[in-house]
Image (tube, rainbow, N blue to C red; front, side, top):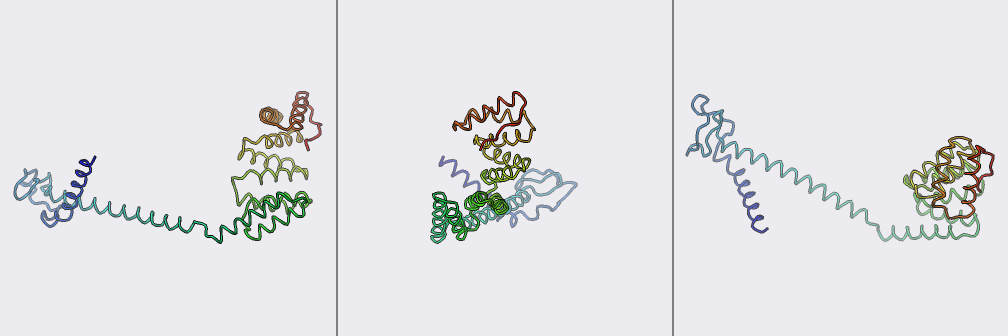
Length: 264
């Protein structure tokens, strides 16, 4: 391995020397010496590597090519170093400062308080406190929307869910909660769309399948999709009440009936 490295470094040094010294020794690489008698001459004291079919000095052209190659390589290395340096700078700036870390911990503390709150008013206040510290926290936005939905403030809830979707595009919870909101106010088509998005983002969650199937059943459309969703949900569902609703719905679908009570 050391021998190969030494050979490689030696060839690189030779190439660099050729690029630097060659133009001064060999002359103009594009000079045409004698198109009648000077083409394809063998190596000599005048032309170290002979001439090509256009009577140009091969050594001069080799030296010129080496200089161009090293120049391109130097530019490429410079660009790589600049990108690396900017990446390092971005990495350093991305590191959380002690103040930011403290703020983040306080935000999480308020979110935990909201999750443990005994009533919706205390829960809502906890999330509002979290958002005072970080207005871009998607979890606090989503959970605040749930509080508004519990209180019947549907427009405010929809605003919070929409903000949470924009802050965390890959999070399924805001889409699911928007589906619950739409379903609660009777907008079943929009509810289906929201549940479908949530399920696309988190296909492993059985509840999303159940809720999407429920909207299909309520709408009296896409019976085959409802059947498939319920069959898949039954494989993973653990809640006895939900399992009972799934089986009841499957039986009713078998009889082509859609007048069932929805799962609460």
